[in-house]
Amino acid sequence: MFFKNIRYGAARTRLQCAMSTALLLLAAWVALPLAAQQVPATGAPRTVLVMGDSLSAAYGLSAAQGWVALTAEQVKRTRPGWRVVNASISGETSAGGASRIAAELQRHRPGIVVIALGANDGLRGLSLAQTRTNLDRMIQAARKSGARVMLIGMRIPPNYGPDYTRGFEANFKVLADQYKLPLLPFLLEPVARDRTNFQADNLHPVAAAQPKIRDHVWQVLGPMLK
Image 1 (cartoon, rainbow, N blue to C red):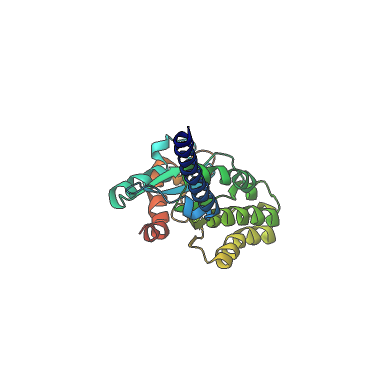
Image 2 (image 1 turned 135 degrees about the vertical axis):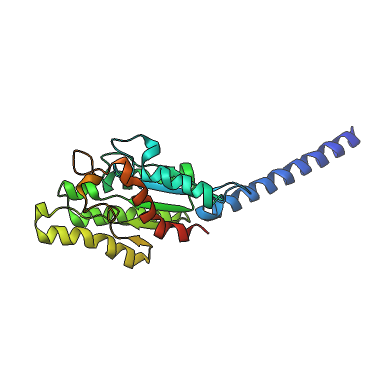
């Protein structure tokens, strides 16, 4: 009985040591910054997460015709260590993006986040300050996760007056300057001046215009994919 007690005590001590070690390792993992916890497995492609509205969600087209899908094809051909995930939603405002970004970051663990929101805020005449705050929240959340951010700007018709129109466009530059972000000032720059590039609503580009938008975005995004 004496030797049985010795063996039992030794086994119990080993078990306690193993449990203590496991708890210490778990505590160390929890203490790591989120970015360190989210390092993808060796060989796994890094992710470009696009968060936009109908202009990025291929409104009125098949998903494969949109500039994001065309960009994903280009990434697959030329940057095999990367992939593109399109989390854009038609009708999305900056507030919607700000409310969704934490879940999208957790789900996809991107290396780069492309923020292409704000157009619907401008079309609805929403508060410029609130739009800037929402975009700021998205930028901070992405950076805190360890992702780099590319910001895509937009311009709107002068329906709400010159002050609003100028302030809307300036929001993107202010944020890009504040956080030193790569900025594409106007998503539709290469197609905006030709009415034939747009669907009947005069807002959403046709399929034939999407490669031009892809190439426009690629000028900024491409160099980020190293």
